[in-house]
Image 1 (cartoon, rainbow, N blue to C red):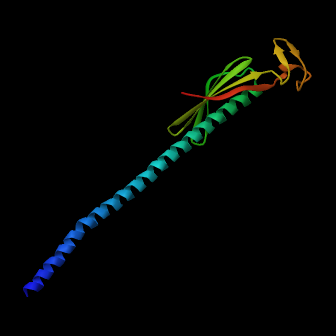
Image 2: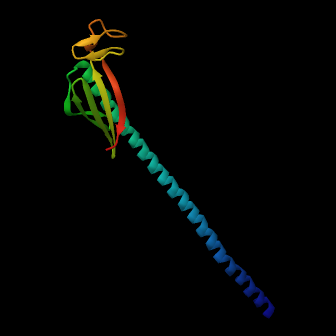
Length: 161
């Protein structure tokens, strides 16, 4: 009988020694799972922020295109500020200058902002020169001369806020 109880005590000691090992393995598995989930959440937040930034850029681009269209229709067009809405995005646009016009278009989407600066020449044809009233006509200039009404893009760049 004494030997039988000794056997029971040894068996219960083996189970007691396995418990810390199981707990340690469980904690390690839990830490790995938490790391994977948090990594996925961080990656998702970064990806969503990138998407919002792209949408803000596209909204700014739309605003710049709108300003160019308005300048094409009215060569004297300037504006201290107007707004174009595109879905959930908003473009705030200013147009300044006379012969050379500077367009600033700031696209805002959610909490992201991107800004473009576009410079265009008004009344200048490709291949021709426009120096006041005199125009050298060649290339693709219309027969009426360079002042007839081309809008030519000089630069298109993103600027920092």
